[in-house]
Image: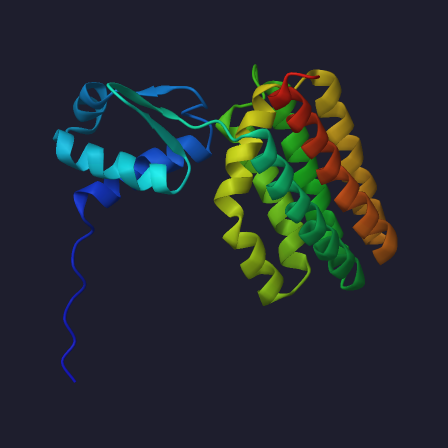
Length: 225
């Protein structure tokens, strides 16, 4: 059997990866324009791969194109936030329950360390949408999901990963110091439930944590907060 070496990644895909990462870590924020001429200079490529990348990201619902105007980073709609976070609430509740059933001192210590790292980064940051804050928030929730020990659950959460991160960027952009303190308290309460191997309470707290974020984000997106 003859195997051919893999083709080099198309330039458009490479540009899409760069822009996708910038959108999902908050470096590019919802509403930011994506000027083709600026991107060609910054990335040292021609317009063709830029246009290919923008089309790809539009299909992924990360970018909105506009007739005769520059594309912009897309802002998730209230209904999208509601749906994505309702699904996330259910999945992360299950993850917390299963993590509690498998809890070890090492797992609990790791979760506490991640929660403290996130809180420290939030306090140190001038804005909640600092990519470092977003990364540590993702790390904490990913650690709980990993502790559940389910490949199927991990696969389901991974299928929503980019949508969740996109919504999280919006939420962290409006994060207040008061809300940051509430988030930290909610994380610590969840960790306590996992440490006590209380699956019912862990699932309830994890689901409520995500639903609370969902309701705040939807209210802000609707302009009713």
